[in-house]
Amino acid sequence: MNDVKTILEAFLRFEKEERLFDDTVLGKFHYWNQVRQYLYEALLGHYGLYSYDPLISGEKWDTKKKLAFFKDLVRNEVRLMRSKKKEVVFVCTSRNMNEKGYATDSLIEDYRNSLPAGAYHQVELFNNLTFDPETKYADRYFNQLLIFIQKFSFLLIPLVSKKVDRLLARYADRFGSDVKLDARFTKKMIADFILQYYFFRRVMRKIRPRVVIASQWTTGMYRACNELGIDCVELQHGSFSGNYTLMYDYPEYVEFSGLSSFPKYFFTFGEYWNEITHMPGKKLSMGNSYLTTKSTAAPDTRFDAIVFVSNKDFTPIFLPIVKSCAKKFGSVTFYFKLHSPEYEYLDKIRAELADYKNVEVIYNERTTNELLNVCDAMFTIHSTVLYQALQLGVKAIILKRKYYWISEDALHLEDVFLVNDEKELFDAIEGIYRKGDFKRQPKKEFFKPFDRLGFQAFLERYKQERP
View 1 (cartoon, rainbow, N blue to C red):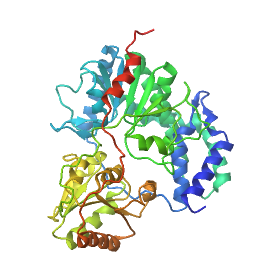
View 2 (spheres, one colour):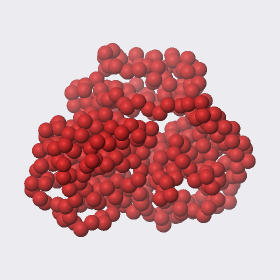
View 3 (tube, rainbow, N blue to C red):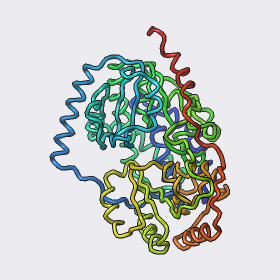
View 4 (cartoon, rainbow, N blue to C red):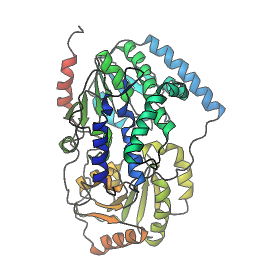
């Protein structure tokens, strides 16, 4: 097995023949959905098709941060006890910034703005950015308790060990004992899933919503809500593909049930995404205002600018490359766009690139749509921004490292340049500017505008009197 298609087919045969979607731990938790992506990645890694590079060292917690954490934990639990019932709960990952510089979940905003203030409750899964102090605790609950209790997931690991050890033995028999994976990490994912289930079961029994809308893959919550009869919606929050993203692609025989860890509905960015994967729940195309591309420049404008689209897995690879590009192409501006979770690396990266006057590090100060509209090309390995660029007609340069092949559906399109190394990247940049063709020709519609009316029609079913 040395290609993605062959590996995927073998993996799907394994899980079907072993009936892994039927397996449970502790008598009630179907666990395979929690680990199948990781075990598939381990198999890809064994054949040199997937890998993680060392990351930049992260944020350090001091005594002040620890005290603030536990203070917020207590405050949150008191506020939850006082919370009133709401028809709608949004489970947010507020890692973007609004125009005032405060944390917001850009994927949730469309839906939240469709409802009157006070008509919903918010649960926050990401709380490392600053929230507006006037609205921080208004119908909002943070996840400090979940973070805390998952520190003790090791207590659950002995309870799932025997079942997981048998699974890993079957996996080794099928694919070879030399496939490198972390057995304890596999068990911890299952333990974290179980703790997430109990955490959200408590929260949802208190707020008693009729529908929960989440901007993150939150399997423990889906399991709890399905059991409680609460409908769950997951919002698409990135690009995905049938050759890699198994949490959004399931065999036809897998069905939604009250004991499953799938959302009942999946809202996508556009019809394109509905066609390329299979979900046990129902897929609806709702669009998105944040990712919908809007052209603000003349279609043939030359900007002498290129945006590097990074994330914490790519940043160690991209830093030396952007430095070399800055030296070689002194008249070109290079925007180094960090991924939202890279807040803890921001100062280090800005310091490292400070001597390169034609490099500008961008965190959340400008959106990818804004940057694409002032650049001639974008450079990445794999990113949702690739599809934004193609919809705008911006040229895309893809470095053939790591898991670039995930975007295989887009790599054959016109104005997509594949490069193996720094030299080929230089050649691609020189070719783009030498050719002088800056006319933007959109390739496909990957993202449609938010369908407010469609969402309001969806909510009508939940506006009836409670049974």
